[in-house]
Image 1 (spheres, helix red, strand yellow):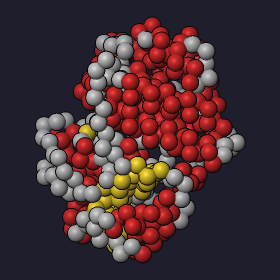
Image 2: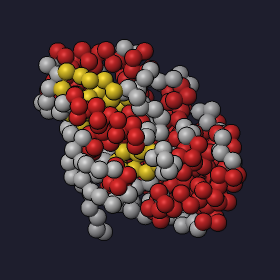
Image 3: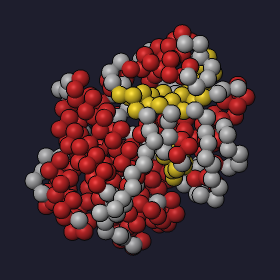
Length: 376
């Protein structure tokens, strides 16, 4: 056995720990670009709370609230221009995965010149970014625990990750109390994304003992706690469990990567701007059922983690969970058409070649097209 594991991430986990954000930010500078969304953090009062904590610690905040779902490369560019113009010396991401990913892109662009798409496609490299603090308000992407920032180029539809240790947060404040204001449909979508992260990292050809151990823990937590939380029957401990599982999901994909479900979903949401978790819900059972024979032992473990008995009912158990979360959707219901399939197939290999190759069963273009058709 031989493997390497390196993830220099500073996680500050616990209920109520958002109160520490002012003192934490003050250790990095005096003026922050505070990246957030347009609605939820304002409506919940969280944005005012955080700016108050920052002010009390002597940190000024410039609010940038133009990030939407499936964040755009152009939005990251706009945020970086504002941060530079305002003399910000750090970036704080406060919100869901789209917010955190865009905050990472902004922090990176503040100190790296040129087109961010060149860095995303490895035509250029950068080793530095502004100091970055992340505070997630949804338990899904795990962006607080890795060096990935998924961004969509609006000119090409390419949805792909900027991958760099430079965008690993100096500190991530992970406070499950912040998750409790999520609308239930959002919880369902992000929670399933978190489950997919650990499933895919567990199945990945890059998996290793450390990631396997973490994946099993995260899948078990989500299998036990996600549906009760969605149905309104969860406790504070359940919120902690699902929040921690989400962070684990981000950590394991940093090392082991994602596989075909994410590889096929990114072209779908790049093409039709669909909700990421819903796209995964439409694709994951189809892909699972088509590939169980490639890794029956691992699919058996996945099934047991989410309430099944062995590999033979893994797809069925996934569909059962999705039904309980009101996420039993098709790509067609999400707006994808048969005419989109040729573009999505080619884009899958363009932006997600690694995910295709990491899957335990490698599908060719014709087979991926058929999987898209089954998911319509």
